[in-house]
Image 1 (cartoon, protein in one colour):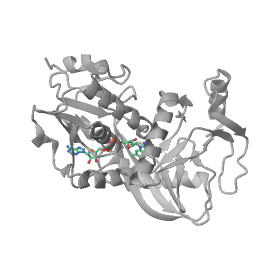
Image 2 (cartoon, protein in one colour):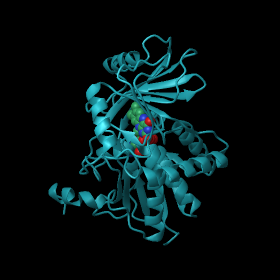
Image 3 (cartoon, helix red, strand yellow):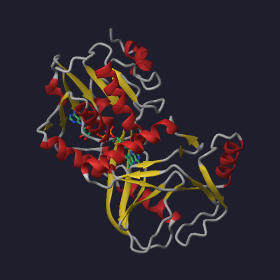
Image 4 (cartoon, protein in one colour):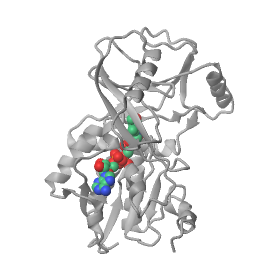
Length: 347
Ligand SMILES: Cc1cc2nc3c(=O)[nH]c(=O)nc-3n(C[C@H](O)[C@H](O)[C@H](O)COP(=O)(O)OP(=O)(O)OC[C@H]3O[C@@H](n4cnc5c(N)ncnc54)[C@H](O)[C@@H]3O)c2cc1C
């Protein structure tokens, strides 16, 4: 690999931060660019890592390989930057109704959830949580303070003099490799708008409560995440319209209503409503790789609601690809969508 090449990482969310750091630590010449003002989904993220998700109790893609790497990465960053960002947390997956319980039981009988379930319960017996259909306690969950991490890394990049604020449009320069880590915004970049994005906007409420104590992350499709020091986040909505709009009253009320079905009577003090946009591919896996016609333009996006788990893996993939000529994992490679590029009339 030619270490004289300059790498420009566009976007300093979780993905861009870890990609930039991985390249820097390998001795590469890196600059990082973001916008001002920023709209960064990583600042809204609760940073949860959940081995099982969705209505079908699907196990998270490559959880068993990604989780140890993610945990090791975040622990290393804690030591290096003197921050506390990683917590292990049980997940209480509450059943929504009897059908939800049956879906779980079928999945469990097939052995698909082996190793992930600590216990099953018919009622939580927890003084604050309402769970009439019972649930399961899932192991392998973590909470990462992604906002603190990205803000700390911004300071680090700034100290090195490599963080700038600007627009990607000014960058076209064939002597650089430009790595687009712009999250959901990649869908509006002409270079990558042909990719099958299914982005969604999500809102959540951040609140404090002196009374509420949770045994871990509470999740039934709607989640409540304990952030520590009496702070919590609850969410989130999924909206496919007005992708980059500010928080909306209707969605705020949706979140509040759902929150109150799980913790009906505990007093809370709302701090703010937060809104961010998730970058999601049609097959729900991330996308990594070079533009078909502009090999110096590379994208890393599509992490969906799993970026906390996958970002360390993606950063390593990018580093291995750019510095060691390694192949990108075929399941996340941009190559899987290449027909769409030509279908859209590009030659
Ligand atoms: C409500 C909500 C809750 C979530 N909770 C979780 C969770 O618990 N766990 C989890 O794993 N994930 C969660 N997510 C998903 C989370 O957003 C991703 O996991 C991940 O943090 C996204 O990181 P990213 O770096 O790809 O994108 P972002 O964090 O959005 O970063 C993209 C950056 O690119 C910059 N940018 C964009 N365009 C340009 C441009 N043209 N020029 C310069 N800069 C540009 C933006 O300003 C931004 O800083 C949640 C998302 C939402 C909306």
